Structures are given as structure tokens and as C-alpha cells.
Length: 159
Length: 344
Image 1: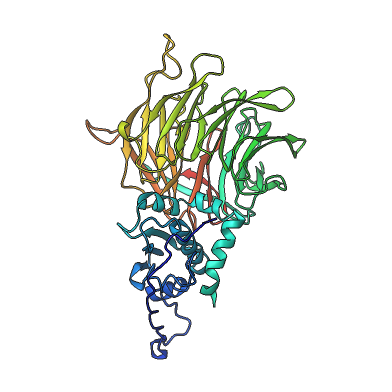
Image 2: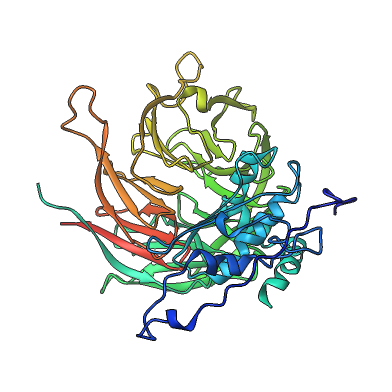
């Protein structure tokens, strides 16, 4: 495992206030399907814990609401995350956490792309390629150590 | 011209996780032998499906389980159809023998450091190739008594190797990889001296991202490859196999098909009738044929048809069946296999 923290002193940001969905906005027809929007997806992933700090991805500004792009009609989501440091070796773990959480939360019709923000990581292309190779993701998720690590990071996001 | 249509004949359920791959048994589908294929899945099992000759419907005849401990990524029948090889993320390749309808695991090939991703038999059934995330390609010789001896470990790819395929008539091996390259391997010295004789990569008009699969046309002088770069590429050679002087006839880029797929193309397979099918992460199946009315500088291949929403999720594998009137089978992340009939 990792000896010594990759980023020993990360900057912590305030959590964005949770928006309560107003009751007025409920559709008249309670059976109508409400499209999945940016905030709904952000809510699924904002509380994921950073792999090496006791803070959430939101508190570290690894993800923001604006970093979520969603096209519900075409069942497409793209999440762009920003590692706290350029050489963050945790980037693939963070990406894996995001992918697993969305895999478990979104309807199976969804296509999900996960990427690091352009210019935010030294090996951006390599990280992006690995995160979007579903065969590698599938193999990683059969690795008990990795799954433990991912589940630990995801735990607060289910509260 | 009559309008062709890809009709869904049957949807096969049974796997409890994504279906990664399938392989039609080449010894079936003619002379009164019902069509058979094997499928493999993230559920760690292999299923054997057989067509009922009276109603043409497929049903599951056997489930091969409790041998592989992780995802079974690919499967391949020997040319005689008697043996089935299965490659798994558990780093092993299992060899199964059909003994009166029961499948017995008769051999387990160990050696790769981690996930085995693909397995392929040569035309005569005397050699087997496997490839892995460990970046290597292994060649195994089939010995009497279901023994398999590793005769060569080929290093050359710089990333995991996604697929290996033997040429349909020659003992020349092709591999494609996460490193964006396709490599051609041949035994030039005739003494298990396997070497990389060609690399088809970006400098040769090759792919710019992971190459997931490759397939040959019936005569073996053309090959089609598909990639995460959303393109299909057709390659050709003047002389299959080795030239009379002992040299290797290189492959060259013939054309690139882009603008058809919206997401990663995981699979491509060329039928004996000259139609190649592709399956992609956009849930669609597309069929391409030679563009006969090709004017000078016109495209060499054209889209014959596109079947949108062929599956509810990514399509991982497509393959045409043997026999006079081939059926197309597709395997998907949605856990199902579909059998399709191309008709008008």
C-alpha cells in the first residue's frame, strides 16, 4: 500500500449547501418519470471519501456539481474530476470509486465516462484510458483488496 | 435491390452477469449436425447452447462451472469441435472435452501472471495461443493425452494484449493490444523460433487507441480490426503465409471506416459470404460489405445496415455461425445472447 501521503496538506473547501427539492416542483402526475439531472448525480458522488484523507471529494473540490454533465434523454453522463495534486497516484482509485458508485446508482441504460480534468494530471491520457477500459475495470473489481478500498471510500456516500 | 433486415430469432437468457464472448462450434451446422456454440461470462461460467433441428430454437445443454474462479473472458473450439478452450481472469486457460454430452475439464494451462484475455487454435488444431494483461502472448503445442507444452513466450506488446487470432490457413499469429498496435508473429526458423515479423501501428495508418479485436476474410488475404478510436480498419496482403524465398509478405492498410460508431467498438467478425459485422458500446450492430458500385476514389466498403438497440447495453462480441446460411450471434453486458437472421 501507500507509504506516506501523496498530498499531506490538502486544501479543504466548504461543502455546498444541500438543496432540498421543493415540493412544488413535484409533477402533477406522481407516476411521471422525472429526468435524472446534474444535481441528482452530484448527490450520488459528493460524499465519496478521498482514499487518503478523511474528507469527501466535494470538500477537496475533486468534484463539483459543474463537473457533472448529464444527458438523460441519451442516457449519458460524464464526470470530470480534479485530483488534488498533479502526480496523484490515487487518481485511478478515485475514478474507480466514481465509476462504481454510478454503476450502482444509475439505471443500466446509462453510459458513463469518467475523466480527469484537462491539465490536472501528469499522466492524464493514461489515467483516462484506464478508467474507461471496462475490461480493466471489471478485472479490478474482482480484486478483493481494491474492492475493500473502494467500498471504504463509498461508505459515507450511502448515508 | 431488396431491403435486408437483421431479424432477432431468439434472445437467450441464463448468464447472471455480462456475457463477454461466444464461439460457434465449427464442426456443427452442416451434415445434419445441429448448430452449437459456447458463451462465457462475468458469472465465471461457460454455457453450451444447441439448436433444436425441429423448431430451430436454441437451448442451454450444459453449464461449465466451478473450474474458473473469476470471469471467463473468452472461449474457442478446436477445429475438430472436440475440445473447448476457455480463458479466464483467474490467469488460467482450461481445456474441456465433450464426453458423450458431458464436458470434462481435461487440462489447465498455467503460466500467465494475471488475467488471460483471449485464446485461439491454429487451423490444424496443433497449436494454441493465449494472451494476457501481463503483456505476453504464449504459444502452446498440443501433445498426445491432452498435454499442452508452452513452446514460446512472446514479448513485444507494451500493454495488455486484448486478443490473439491465428490466420485461417497459415501458422501465423496476430495479436492486438491496449498499446494500440497489432503484431504479427511467425516461426521463421521452423524450430519454435517465433518472432514478431510486423507491427501495424500509428505510423502505418494504424489505430490511435486500444485495438479490441480482429477477424479475417474467407480467403485470408484481408483482415479487419476494431478499436476504442471508434474506427474499423481493413488490412491486406499480397501473399498469405511465407513467400517462396522464405520472407514474410507484409500487411498494409487498405482503408479506415470512421463516422459509424459512437462508442468503443469491441468486436468485429467477417462472414464467409463477405459481410463483416461489428458490435459496439453504443448497443448497435452494423454490417458492412464490399462497395461494388465503387467509383474511383469511392469508399471500398459500405454500411449494409445498422441495427440500433440490438441490446439494452454494450455489445461485447459478434460472430457468424458456420453453415450454408449463417446466423449471427451477439453477446452483451445486458447478460443476454441474441441470435439474428439476415433476411429480406
